[in-house]
Length: 460
Picture 1: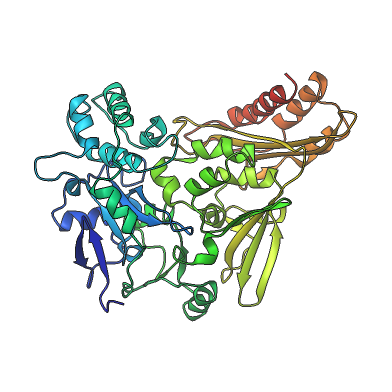
Picture 2: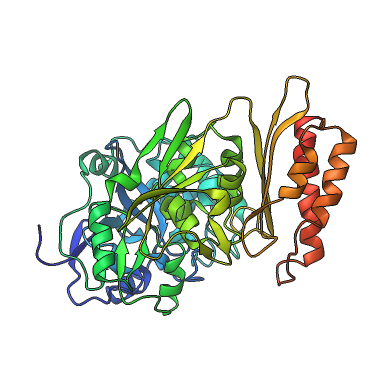
């Protein structure tokens, strides 16, 4: 183990001794004269700052993950390895991702180009079916070129193979994070017990996992805590178990991994994850982080409510489970105690459960929702409704189920009369607010209309 913290960039090791641990990777890159990585929004929305982080899964599979460098505090990066756009070309020979952008005229002013290149680069070495589809660059904005040439660059890359090149060879031998000292104020425990002990020693320290939420504050210089306990290296939080009766998801499992490994298990999850955020955010964001921040517009929270999830917590007093229906207490206030850690989320698997989710937002693929909804339904032998969950985000101070409307539907058939009775009740079931995204009346109307849309998929 190195006595000094370090970070490896483009194969070169940088000593991080004395570096401000709350400084974003993006800002620190500028101090090292690595100016190819651009600053656009500093919020994780535009993708101009995309870099490729080397990552090793629990099963030993290594990959390049496109991430937003503006959201990553330096304290989380000790021992990690990454690539920036400066590390792709070999002399005058461009990487295929760079060459495709040149060949297809995918750049005008060029400001967004390095971010696009890095997203395309990561896609070149991914086995995912959509690795070089539009979803791979959905988190990268271009103001002047237009997306048609950039999409053609991605299409050109799909016809090439990067297998066996130097970057693929590097992945083959990558064995994970290097061992080195922590930066001051950022602790990187390796077990849940170690994390809880650190929290007991420093009660004011803040849990941090993917940094896609806290990273926004840190990027803008807003200090959230005196110290941080990083959860990304705890193996137990990375476990994902698919069993006949349940699915158990470690709180540290990334949304990209959920999207990949749980595909087809819960349709509501499949339908929400592509709209959750950009690929760069999903590569870092965790299920536990979405629960921990407890935002009333957290996209996965209505899904968890509809699927009757339970939250597994660990604290100084031991372990306990909290039903998701009792977890959200008030605006960003939950049943989790300050010294407790979210360890896992359990989702029961119910035979015959029809479930789906829908989201309305202004920028559909990478925006906070106006209203998000998740629905689950099970029918009795006679076709009547035996089980129903109608869950919403964006309509109250917490994610909520429409309990009264659920009661109205039990025992009824899902015919047009029942749908309209429920829709009318949903229109007045919540008390949403007016804000810059939408009016309260619009949100109330969406609550009803999204249920109509779901019902139409069950009984056309």
